[in-house]
Amino acid sequence: MSNSYPFELMPLPYDYSALEPYIDTLTMQLHHDRHLKTYVTNLNNTLANYPQYQGWSLERLVTEWPRLPAAISEEIRHNAGGVYNHQFFFNEMAGKPLSPSGSLYEGITASFGSMDAFKKKFTDAALGVFGSGYTWLVANRSGRMGIITTANQDTPLIKGLKPLLCLDVWEHAYYLKHYNVRADYINDWLELLSN
Image 1 (cartoon, helix red, strand yellow):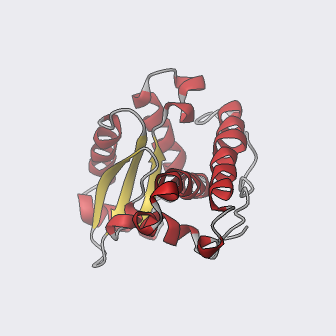
Image 2 (cartoon, rainbow, N blue to C red; image 1 turned 90 degrees about the vertical axis):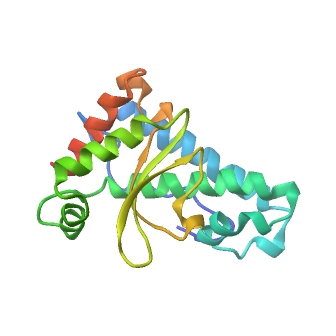
């Protein structure tokens, strides 16, 4: 997988059906093969006529897009963010980051008091996203954890925060199984990362 132009569609790190019953197979196929692929294609198309930016890493594009020419800055913001956010989201579900034996679990319990308290705050933040966006568990430069939300395809990187967990709350991430009931999707995602 490349980290500069031309960007490539990352392979899904597990079978489309691997997250059943929490996330359904068809949603995974559409989310990865169509949504993420579209962001990759659009990012490459936007950079095609700008060789001076083709060596920029994905992380640099999502943090320094305001420095780009006005003709491409918003396209880069949305599409580079779409690639970054989706890659992060798909990759984190390859393991069980909230399992009690992990360092992330220990950090969460130290920061929020308990896993249940974290899940409540994270769920409330995810339910509070108006429209499309993401909910993130992040760490600042001193390692202190917090929960933030971002709109559309914005990332925490531009704020100097390190992403630790990412929940995609765009409707395409859950509508086929959960319709418009975001709370059920959030609960399933938390179960997936915990069990």
